[in-house]
Amino acid sequence: MIKRSSKRKKENDLEKNGFSLIEILVTASLISISLIAILGSFVQLVKADAMANNKAIALYLSQEGIEAVRNIRDSNWLDETLDWNEGIGNENFILLLNLTTGEWTLEKVGLGNKWKTQVYYDPDDNLFLQSKYKNPPKLPATWRKTNFFREIIVDKYEPEGLDIESFIVQSKVWFGDNEGNAVISEEYFCNWR
Image (tube, rainbow, N blue to C red; front, side):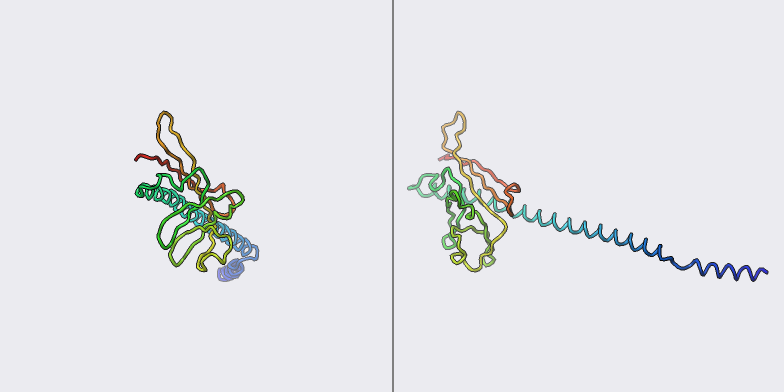
């Protein structure tokens, strides 16, 4: 009798050892939900990384704008025949780099010419550049359009109580269609000579 009951117990145990269809579906659903959550987090991480990369490039371009204006001012000081603020006025500008001489110049943007603020990338020289030409045939063939735009804004600044010629320079860089995500660097320049 003991043998028979242990045989029945073994048969019942074999029937219970398998997984039911419901258990498999529940397990598959839980694994699917977990994978979707992990993939969603990965996509958000990639987007955040791209945004951080864009912000870093925008910061670099913005600071470069300030340094280029400083270079123009300093070059004016070295040339005794020029005013210290020659070529720098109360306007909105783009930066142009003469690749032959390495000199920066400011080009007025003007109304209706927002396209001038487009920044290009030249992989041959590893430079971010702007152009006063709208038509691609006038641009070097290696230049690629980027998602970045840069504008240099120069305003006269008169410190209260001081008789010093000065101006404030803002270098504004944004990417995509939204100027709301702009990175702005700001610097005050004066004629201390």
